[in-house]
View 1: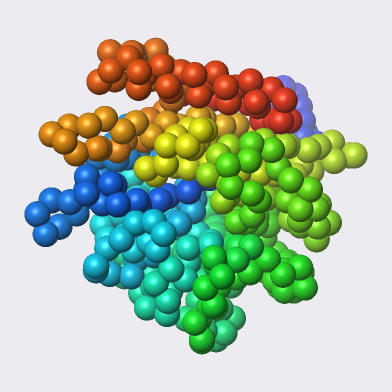
View 2: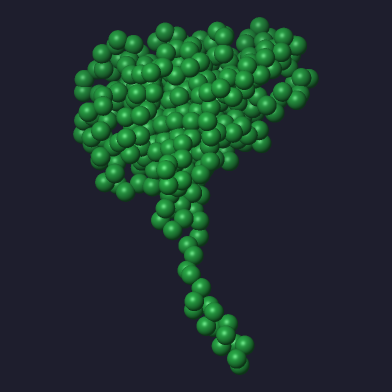
Length: 361
């Protein structure tokens, strides 16, 4: 009996521990659809992009929430690539089937097809039940849906999205494309805080194309966002990789992460460093009502473009995985190009990346 009472008393004195909640966010880079990609995806009168993501799908699907930058419009036929993009709706369908949950729509190609492009992109994504943010039918639509609040695993994320511009194409009234305007962003962040999210994340289209180093404008903008209370900043637009930084606060509990550019996820670009991109995996942990960005990781990706039956095809590969399988590639030059890019980016990241580590599985 004494033994039993002792156990009871000990149990009463034990602290009540709340289970730890975890959320794995995955951010991927620019989803492009150049003309050769459209040609490869065409199947008679229809299109299919499913095979493009077959090799990367397992890594997308394992994330709790996967978020991509949709750098095309879904404006309908006739379809077109650069410089004014209109991709088939099947591209969005393939992204969803591969595990992408959220699409960001504020970028410099948002207004490529005018009002039709802005509005139809929203309409199609809604019809496919693909969550999106960054562009809106009008101010009322924006007020009702922005900031976007994501909730999973008992963790909530307020997601905001902005672009530096739209290639000098005016935003057609009454549609709205979120622009980088510090006054408006501060208002939006304040509104996000009223939703009591565990994390505020900003996806921002910024920087200089083809530059491997973030410029001072990007760094100033990131500092502004962090001062406003943002914990996670994810950049796009340069079409090449730039560094990642994970910071620990003075009390070693709250962390802030900045990813300056994830490069291209898929495209037909061939300029230096444009075929390799990265996925950023952010681990958010919530314990006893305290939320921390616990871990930042990246996986390099490679757009493999073999020619079959005189048509160039497109596949997104986990680069480090296929670095061990030269027999997968149609020719030695393609394999060597990937290996050289992978080595180059690993060297760059040793210089530009803080707190993030590479993962390959």
